[in-house]
Image (tube, rainbow, N blue to C red; front, side, top):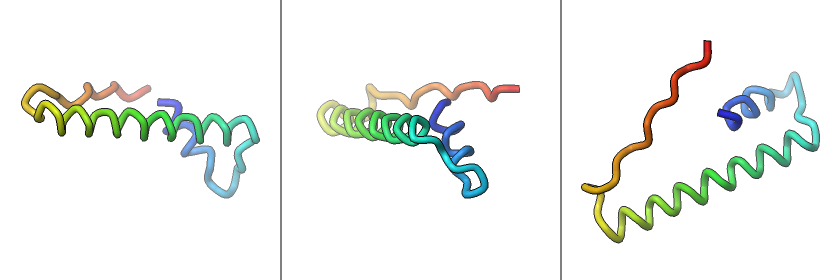
Length: 60
């Protein structure tokens, strides 16, 4: 996932470029939006119809 890659790059030893910072902000905002939407759906219809997203396979 791109957010994980950018998180690894954000350690103090290797500062992010302006483009990478913006991409990180966009990715975290998108993740928050999707998390909030999921919470609204669960509140409205209950959690018996909503399943957890599938786990992505780790990259070798």
